[in-house]
Length: 309
Image (tube, rainbow, N blue to C red; front, side):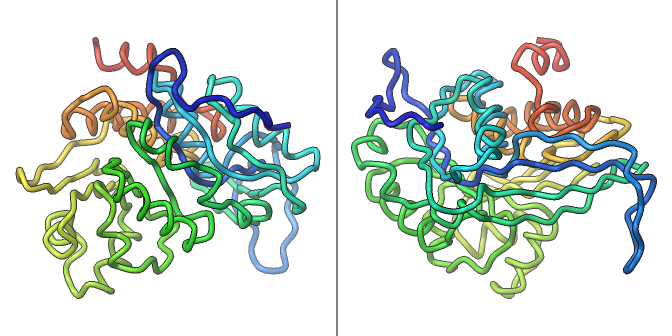
């Protein structure tokens, strides 16, 4: 179970990315096609793996070479060990993952013959994740804060406010696209959205869903991922598009989380945003070519080879 120690968030003098988010056990079913209403199908395969947007992104960043501290919650059930396994394998710090009296978060993932997925998530213990699991001293020593939307939005808001007050860079992945207060969104240093999340946010702002329009309306840096069309960004320095790396998709589960986690890791090393997006696109393509959630996330050496570096 999670460590109960007061391990420092700075290990070996190196500051870490603090990832505040969800941990799940993923039940991954492979089928020729997804079932229709009232239909029962036999799956070709079942895999049980670690998942959750927060943990996926933390593992992606850790595998890409970042030092990462995960903040979240699991239950006292057998699925907790599954949810924690990928973080531990990647070397992430799990001292701030708490055990609560609720079921560990769980996702049921259906993947068809074309690699497309359908996902249903039960948040469970993730709903008990609290911002006060991270001390201000931890935030003051960290290099960046990475957040998603699979925990209580009020806790995400509270941590964003504290990070902003301390001058800590925050990367907010608005996934899923829950109606987070717009002023809270503006506290982030970088907003990352996919096409659906961009559409939902743009509708609230009364603007177009392109990164440039969202940047103008929110006043913060924005990255919008576009699937096989790549990604685009808009900052005070301008706007640009990064093409996707061509890949025959096997399984798109966690590809978006891979992009965000590797993006965060690259930025943490001081890589400019455009180059960080290029690296993240290559890593996400590698993930799409493999089966599984965290099992599909590439290690730094693999992404380096794919980039030719």
